[in-house]
Image 1 (cartoon, rainbow, N blue to C red):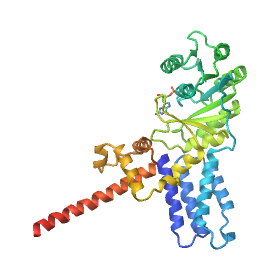
Image 2: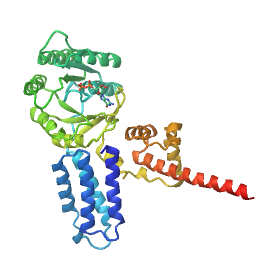
Image 3: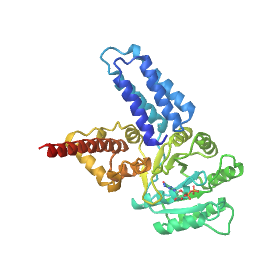
Image 4: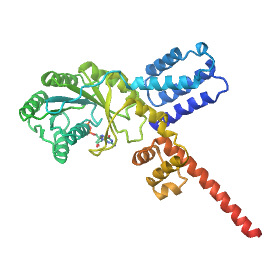
Length: 379
Ligand code: GDP
């Protein structure tokens, strides 16, 4: 189940619960079972789902609630808070200070988008006036230095690496020293991607960590990672002091639940998300707006009357004529809907609502046209 669908399924379960004539234990249980099923289908780890269910049952004590309490609101809030808790360890991460040298080390599985994210991160701070620099301590993957060099050159960011040296610790230390001398205030160290089973590479990562003493270690995780995510993330956390997480490829057709589990495993805040291959497709991450958007709880989701029509028009402006005219669901897949939502500054649920509304209007219009034709024929 992809992220947008996950949000839709949870919202539907909550809606069903709030439509019940009486909200009792059975209704609450059914609602929690539906929510748990949706989370498991999205690859969220079983233990996390179970904890969430227990916590909500502990918080929402229906018997003790006095008459007049809005039970559905209390349940909705509990679900919202538990989802936020999954993504929010309750502590903030280190933030680099302009003008003061900070070292930030990136770790993650090979292919997670680590090297791309290093440059995006550097570019993000460069636009804000920092003086970043990139160090390629990935001597394991052939072409890693070329890739970093190309990205850095495109973004006009100084870089350091070597084709000859095979010791990543040596390169990392030299790079950090050189850029510290050059008064660069944000030195970013890219490390080799590794797999949980690769003990030697994990040891190497630990050595780079010890030698460079980074102010922050950012764990990069691909949003499409499945059930293995929790264990992988934990293996990284046990080797180095992961202080923050960046989730990549949020633009794709992803389940996403695995990355939610990984975040919980590292007990570190998500600070950015990658939303495309391009340098600027990188966004600051904030838990509450993200969960609000996922569930469609955001107050922006309930525009009324004219405002709603205006938002629908904005969404339609981001769609092609073919998409508007076609009844082919293939054209409007999850990833396209996410793109449209981003392009129009709206929520994925609003895109879905707009399409439903559009279909209803199209049906109504064809009936009106039929009636008009019939009237013309009989008069
Ligand atoms: P590394 O092995 O972890 O260093 O991964 P790379 O940085 O080489 O990225 C692997 C692939 O993922 C490349 O093709 C990147 O362009 C792509 N990639 C990285 N971040 C994103 C993202 O946010 N969205 C999409 N769609 N692709 C990404």
